[in-house]
Image 1 (tube, helix red, strand yellow):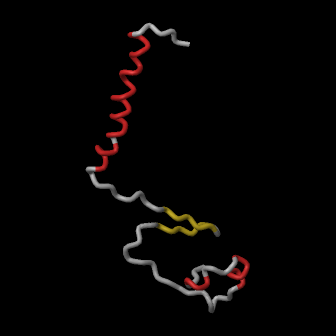
Image 2: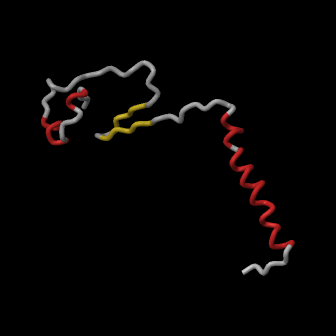
Image 3: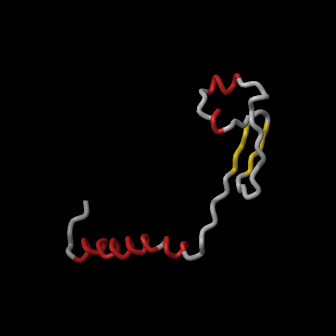
Length: 86
């Protein structure tokens, strides 16, 4: 069931009472990426993962590299200073 923008604010009970003449039919946009599938009374909406630029992949690894650079030497701290590990 598709409603106009003005009818979207109606409570669910009032929306369900609308007869077919008040329901607005809209066409699917040509640039829509989501897939809508109707199966046995249920609706499945599949939203694909947005495309990411190739430069974001190595940039996303920078925080991981920073943590490894910072935490790595700390793991050797207790060995060098002979601290008891509990």
